Image 1 (cartoon, rainbow, N blue to C red):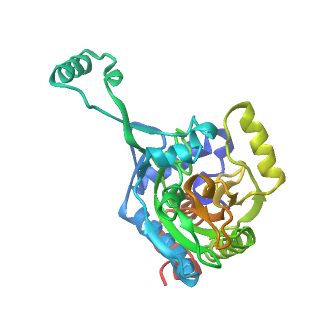
Image 2: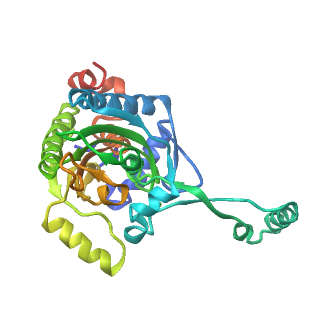
Length: 311
């Protein structure tokens, strides 16, 4: 049973109902923007515990741990081709570089309710849409035999305003990334998803892997999504959060092939363009799923769940 949704959820919006219950319980704090929240210490305590679970797995792989900022260099963003695939999800940081005269005009427009944004220009950073994007320019060059494993975590942004609390605009992502030869990348994705399903099971979440595709934009995106599905480059671990609704993806396993190695000059030990793969944990989505599954008071969660979260 999905606890917070309620028996009459079908009559209303189960997303809004769960949102309201999380807010009323003081776990999340609403803002004027859909999908943007403040988090309570109780909520963040669960987030930290999930991050710690992922970190323990990463240590087993001798991963290099990198905590990345919520913004990336615009040059990195351009090289990932994210804008070509997901223009509707990205967020650009704009800044003011004007003179005193232009500042006076900026203030005038602000006070008059005018178009002050036209006086800004793109800055050198954009909001990060995936934690691992910041990684690739850091590791350009030839990799050692067997490749390398990285643990990357940080806050990300995607412009998807929604009443669904599991679909936040600003959210935590924790990834374990392999970069090396093609077979190693495939093994990392497949084995990593198995590990992720085991971790979710320890948390009392019923999850299963399904082929998936990214939300590519436009007609070209339709072809990309079809290819991604057919070749099973993306698998998602999905779990029920809302009664009577589609299951929600809370972990994804992705084979990138040489998509990131090519623009950043990353080579395998043989000198070929490296392949990469990641297992990405949607930390906020897992947290929301736990509250939906086990109730709004972590102290009342099943003993086996708290033992797994807080060893």
